[in-house]
Image (spheres, rainbow, N blue to C red):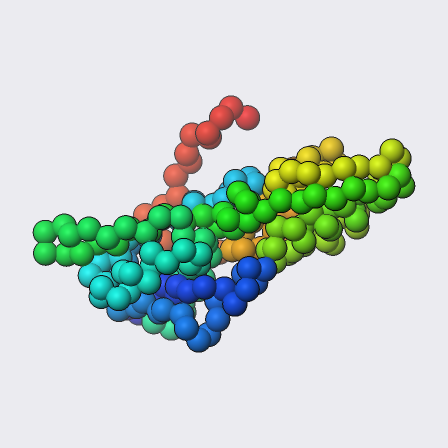
Length: 228
């Protein structure tokens, strides 16, 4: 249980080295740690960006200004002294600082892959007989995110466009339209595209929840968001 003491939280903020790289350079990035940081991260398997909200207390003026630069991305890590893990990766939507009593509080709203989902477009014409998997690959490329498992999943679709296909739309909308008829959905998880069947889960080990890993109390059944 002693491993559960000394909680840690760290925030990395910076510009990606180029638009299609969803990582932060090891140089010229701001690292925030040792301050009071609160966060709320909501993740699901929908195409809409996962939402991230962060509050940071008493940042230096230069750090507050850096957060407001256009195009900033963040990596949020949290855990304990001997184990810290990435919690979220996202594009900053809004960063605002205000004086509350004796504290400066900087509030960040961000979305996972938000800029790509909102603004990336694809414009292509495809000849008759083009495999659907090829069109999906080009659409994923247009999003300029880590393709994740998208290209592997696309190869499992054997259909072709008998009359050709034309694209001139948001890449995120196109990817939904291409995958949905074949029973697939997609989402962005920490800057990585994940494509799954409607009843499929990612092949990752679920975290163990127990008193030894920090669980307080006991799990309780919640009311589902919708019937079924």
